[in-house]
Length: 116
Image 1 (cartoon, rainbow, N blue to C red):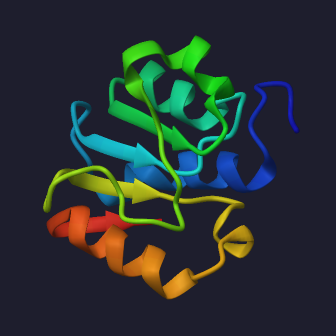
Image 2 (image 1 turned 45 degrees about the horizontal axis):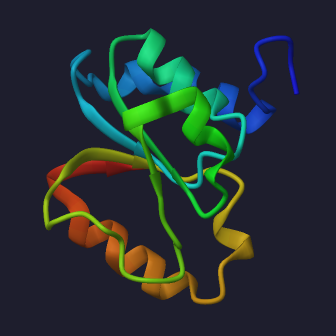
C-alpha cells in the first residue's frame, strides 16, 4: 500500500482513468472494493458516482449508502446496463467462476462502457 491507501494496481487504474474521457459524474462500480474501500473513496473524491461492492461488509461504514454487500460468485444485484464502468482489481482470482462474474459485469455495463 502507498500513503494514499491504494495498492500499486489501484493507483495505476486511477491514473489511467483520465485517458478514458469519463465525465466526473460517471457511474462506476468497484467490485470487490475491499474493507478499506480505498479505490471507491478515491473515485468519489474525483467526482465519480462510485459504488463499492464486496462480500465483506467492512466497507459499509466508510461508504454508507454507496456500499452494496454482494457475492461476486452469484448474480449481481443490479439491473442490466446500470454502470458506465466497472473496476475489478485484485479480486477476480479469488472467485470460483471467473466466467460467470465476467458475464454479470457485461450485463450490468451500459453499451460502450468500460471494464478495468
